[in-house]
Length: 449
Image 1: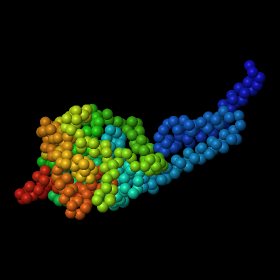
Image 2 (image 1 turned 180 degrees about the vertical axis):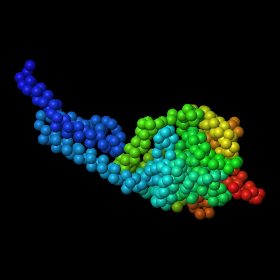
Image 3 (image 1 turned 90 degrees about the vertical axis):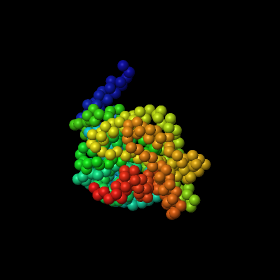
Image 4 (image 1 turned 30 degrees about the horizontal axis):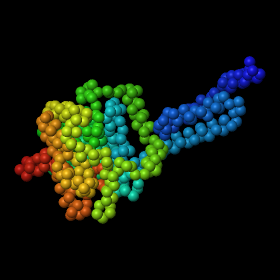
């Protein structure tokens, strides 16, 4: 045995058996876990790195320097954790361009689906998703919006006692970027004297079918109620959806498994991490997925490349997509469910921003964008197979967009957003009102329900 090795071994052995040192190290290790526990840190590898000073403290022959570093580490971790908890109610709304992002959560019992927090009542300034994606404040088109949710977590002021019409769809139908009263569901309600329930939430057709199946049984429907289901050209087929259409066979969670979903929501809402991510987006510059065009007066208009490519795909390409067969199954399942409930179903295909403004997005090929997209043709064909009423709103919205711009230089879309503004929602309400026969019924003197 080398000289002195026995003493070294005894020293290390003594260090390991020191109750005081072990207790201090345990408390320090617990403090380093706090930023990870509240969501400031997402990567578990960082937590492993934070434990390195703790390990050094345990084996160091002289603890003074190790203790100072350990104290600094503990102070930083505790301060960050406390700040994160205190700032949640203060900074939450300021870290998001829209309250719809701030209040999203996964369903604890079925986390494949999302909801907004129940009973939200927000009023304030927001801007568009494309401006947020660009990271450049100069592209923002600020506007004041009101955003309210009901007890079920959908964008309604309340759950009505009786429902004449259900609106189902994604963020377009939910009215992301528009104030509550300007969404086409509320416009239909005011214009036709209907009781409208908006069941829309960001997600694909499969998610919408599940939301419909879960929530509509909780509503009281008038006989012959309408369902208006919107499909969006820009991303609905890009959504993989699921493999289970039987509600009872879905992967439901209970107990600890359900509680862990709520805990992940808590972690995801860390303001310090969200703020850091926002700075990263700002430093990253304009995303190459954001396409910038200019109006004749120089105002910038933003488009989202990954959505616009769907407007150019041929019908055959759409029908060959692996998710198209799932869409057909979703249609069949929805047809069966609505037939059992006695609902009149109308599917409305919504085009992308670039499809409505081809003269601005791609002026060199604007003449090719007049007819229906391949996505619309494929969906119309699928609806015919399943015996669902379906309409493509593209031509109507193109005409309305051109008329409006020629008259007032205004658009149906926010310039900084993939979503429509209030004028766009009013146009969709006009299209839907005609297609579900509300205008004709009222002109014929039928009473409003």
